[in-house]
Image (cartoon, rainbow, N blue to C red):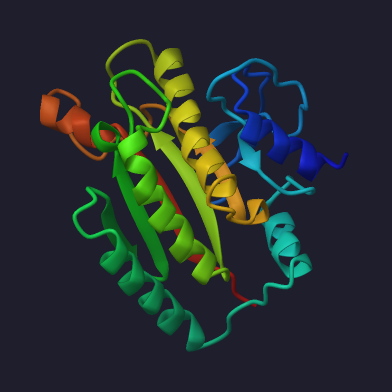
Length: 225
């Protein structure tokens, strides 16, 4: 079995043991756990298989190569902005009223999934009522295959750092597992990371701020030439 198949099968089996080495998120520059290359994950429940779900998990070029190998071409020139505009509009239609926030940063689309609508307190299993939302996300992702997908978990500062790191990883992996498994999103498009409490977007001193910091983000970027 190839490493790609091994990593994807392990993700879908949702293993929990963190046999970690490290990789670097190419966009944030942050070191993150990378269990994809260890092939040493065992256990049950939702797990953290992190890194690139490709057979060359060494970097962004490997992900691009995987997409090209799957017959997904790159975008060029003015087509990029139009492609992302249409994708954003489709997300806004399909996710209206879902609790998912949609942000735009240049040619990037960021879907922000607050933990209070995605997970139960201190849990990493996606809540059953939220799977319909992830189904809608998957349908739009599949309709726009010329984008890469980063699924990144974040936590607030309550509790020990190590625990928050692990919880953020498990939640990101749970969302990615659903999209790749049930949603049939191509695993070669996906990068999975947990950043713990390192990137707050609000003040952790308030309950409202902590609530905003507990989130899973799906970051979409166009595949360009």
